[in-house]
Each structure stands twice: as structure tokens, then as C-alpha cells.
Image 1 (cartoon, rainbow, N blue to C red):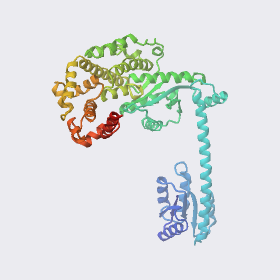
Image 2: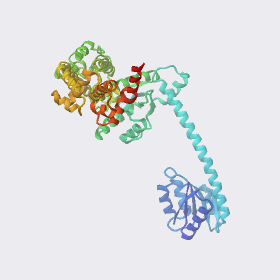
Image 3: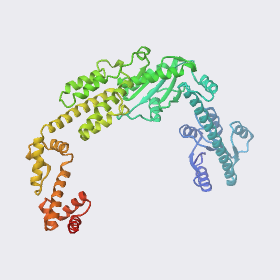
Image 4: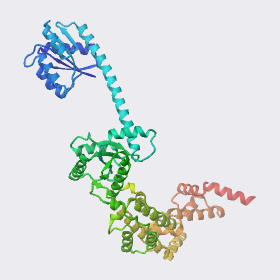
Length: 521
């Protein structure tokens, strides 16, 4: 909907024009009215309009004076299309109107047909201008995208289809001396925040124009800046602002100074390396590349230490578990750690410890499963210490879990007694609490131990015992189904039939008929 402002000191004329226009062009214009040129300028500074209809002679500020000031303010006020309505056929007024690029100069009394035709012409011109603006904007956006893609290709030193074109773009866009900066922003759950939100955050933190920055996106979808050397202090200001406003999870790695296209890929790698180190340093927003640290000898995978760590699980030596884990990750000096090393250690722990534990001891508790699933990927963490705490908790939980299961296997007598109790009292209203109390074992502990001992949970095991006894009675006795169900511990025939069908695939009466048929053959 187009915005239209009517400027006239006579209220009845303003209202009359509004009614005429809205009736002729329903839903096409949102019209406003003011009394003089001063009010019009004040409104235009706050709310631009597409079309301005103005009288010439008005108090405070007349129409010509308003147009003169409006023209002078063209840098700060969007210039509308102007229609002048005048009661005076004066050449000087007409000259002024031409000087200020008035679209239409109409004499009062206004013929509505003339006004409508003028509005229609201006509307068509505006539509055409909108189309041209959109096309120019799309062309500029496409050109910018092409340039960014060509420049982004140079980050990786990959073959470029038109290397000369890419280098030409780079020469045009690259500052003489620059730093490459790679950003990453993770939320509390370790999820990467999208680029649009990150860009908005950086604009707010910067509190200054970012027009000198060349902005790209790498293949991982991260925001990449190429910052002129003279704007290097902007990055420090961003870090200080993030610290003041407490923006955890935001980090950016910065390269050493680079020059020309031939150093762009190296600077990008430096920025990525610096950013990776942020995983080990929560609270550090700006991470500068340090050549000496990058050239340090890589740590060897501590396979023997990991094997020994797995061996002590289930012994209850939590302090030793923590000590060995600290040694594996060099917790006394994190400077030598890399994300690659942590990923390799994590993979080795999962394969040689976790997988073996689950294979030997079965599925653990929900708490252990959740911790295991979380620690499987470093991408779920903002910082290394968060991962380390979860991994340590997981290992201690596994130690406790294995200890209990080993205790179960060493106490077969109690579990054997529990099984014997079930077989002796299956016809009673048994439940797990009753049986665990009988053998003097903790309810939760008994649940895990019983499953490890029998291979089945308590409820399923009891069902199988009862249905096994029921099958014997169905084959060898004349008892009714209701009697048999009660004799093996079911409260009613319906429940008995449902469980029988669940385990045997057929109802009890069909089972009896099948057995009787076999005996007659």
C-alpha cells in the first residue's frame, strides 16, 4: 500500500481529498493530512511517503518553502513524488515547482478526473521504478555472491574454474594488509548458532560500522571476516564487549598478518587452528594464532593408558580412575592438547572401553546411556572441561554398575534362592518387592541382578513360569480354564488368556485342543 501525505491548511480540503482518493483507489493508498509545510517536514523525517500533495500558500511554512527544505534534506529524507495544488496561475510558482522536480502542477478548483489521472501516472512510474530497483538489487546481490564465492575458493587453495577472475576479485576486495578471522558461537547445549543471529550479535557488540570488513562463509558454514590491519583493534573491542555483556559460547580465531591472495589460505588455516584452541579455554573470546604452539610435537595416542583405565572399571577405585583420566588428557597442562587428540582419545575410549562393557554386561541404566550418547560427540560441547566432566562421571557410573553386576555374579546363592522361591510360590500374588525382600536384596539392585542372572526381567520370567505350569495342567488335567488360571497365580481368566496368547501365540483353549488332537492320532 502506497503512503500519501496531503498538506493543506484548510481542513475541509484535506478531508475532501482523502475521501476522493480512498473512494477511487480503495486499498491502494494510506493517506495522512497535515496543516502546513513545517508539520509535513516533521512527519517526513519520521515516516517517509511515496506521494506528497501540497498547497502553496499556508501559514508557518508555505509549499514552496517546504519543497526547498525537503530538497536540501534529500540525504536524510526519502524524496516523494510531489503534486502541487495552487489557486494561483503564477509563472513564478510554476518555475519553482519545476526547479524542485514537482511531477504535477494543478490549479484549483481541482477536477477530480485530472487528480486521478495524475495519481495513476505516478503510481505506474513508481511501480516501474520498484521493478528496476529490484532488478538492480538482485544483480548487485548476485555479483556480490559470485565475488564472495570466488574469494572463498581461495581460502582452500582449491583449483578455481577461473583463477584469474578469482584473483582479480581478491585484488579488488582484499585489503593490502589483513587478518583472517573465523567466528563460532555455540549455545549452552553445544549447538552452533546460525549465521544470521551471529551477525546480528556482532553488529550489536561492535557499536560501529562494519563496512570495512570483507565477510565470507567457509564450507563449514562459519562466518569468516577479512579484517584490514588498521581495523585489528575492532576485534579486541568485540572481545571486550562480549566479556562485559557475558556472551558465553562466542569465540573467534585470528590469523597473523597476511598480504595478497597467496597468503589468504594460510591465514585462514591459522585462524581455524586458533579457533580450535578455544575449545580448551572458556572465557577467552579472541584467540590469536601462535606459530610456536602450532609447531609443537603432536601427542601420541595413549593406548596403553586407555587399556589400563578399562581394566580398573568395576574395582571401586574412583580416585585411580580420575587420576588415569587426568594423565590421558594431560590435565596439568592443556597447552599441548588439540581437538584432534581429544577426538582420537574419545574414539578409542568408546571402542575399547564402552563397547566392551556394554557387550559383556548388557544394557546399563538410562543415566549411563544418556551420558554415553552425549560424550560420543564433541560437537555437543562448547568447551573441553564440560566434556571431561561428563566423561569422568560416565566412567565412575560404569565402575559402580560393573561392581554391582560382579557382586551379583558372586552371590548366585541368593539369586538361585529367588528363582526357587518363584517356582515354589508361582501360584501366589508374587511381585518383585516380595521376592527381593525374601532374599534380602535392594529392590533396584535385585532388578539388575535378576536380569543378569536369568537373562530376563522379573515380570517376564514369572509369566513364563506360570504359563509353563499352565501348559502342564492343560495337557494332563480336566480342570476348567478359570481354575487353571487361578491355580497358576492369575487373578482372572481374561488375564490368564491374554498372557498365554502373548507367550504361546494361541489362546489356552486352542492349545488344549491341539494337545488332545495329538493324543488321539
